[in-house]
Image (cartoon, rainbow, N blue to C red):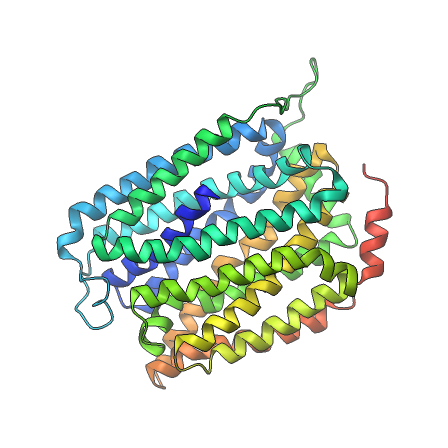
Length: 418
């Protein structure tokens, strides 16, 4: 929760800082690409590292590194802040075009994203060590709810307040949140260190990686589920890559209003985390996943028509609520059916598909805005990705629905783990 509070502050600080340096949609999208590129490049080896090492130690180390990196960003922003326009003047003021600061943002987001890959993979594979299989939906739901409160409800408004006081302040708070999180993870007691049996000679890195990839690809449910999530995330990043420009230029939001817009996601995340388990039991896991694909497409397309941030707040709440229902159902499923010795590797292969498609979606979204901007108005160019993404949700539903059924999920859960 603490590190997610810092992430929520960063959700405001990083895009607002990037928009103070450049107004180019493709350059703005590249920041999102840099953040998600490690999921494409590093997810697979991260799985082997997770299975070879103590997962709690990895989590604490990654957050410690993120704390140091973010302090570096904060110091650089503090040094260059005199050349930046005020946070609420960005949409109308002349940007700084500070190439050094822009490159620093790209490098920092790339390195922070690499740490995030290893941290998130370790944390998801660590949870089954402290939670009984029957309680995983409830535990994951409450974890998602708690994280969303910090990440989207408390963090962004706090980030906006800090931005008003000084561009560097949100980054210093973000760094402190990573440091506090690392310290709390180190302080955990009662969980034995995860080690290989004495005398057990590990296979080669490549052989372990191949085993995890082969296990997932041979699985009749996890393979289409991973592909579906990868495409779903790519579609989502088409819209969020230039969200800050859409909010500033089409919805005319200030930094504070942009932060308040994120509270809709927080409330939706909390709601989704608490209702995911009863919804899955009422509808069945298959129809619950179908609801996410169809409902997400409708809400995404409607956002493209919005003229101010109020309806976007509500539609984002509903969209994120559905997204968290998807995550709770599918993460709990993976934690139940993947053997512990393979959990890190198979989970990383799954997340390779899920996260690896995000930078491609960001590039596509940024390129789409640039292309449409050449023959249509800027406002329409910023709206087109929402319309395209909404239509693609429905295409994806037609592909995925026959494969992601309740019967297929029950068969996977009934299969012996091994």
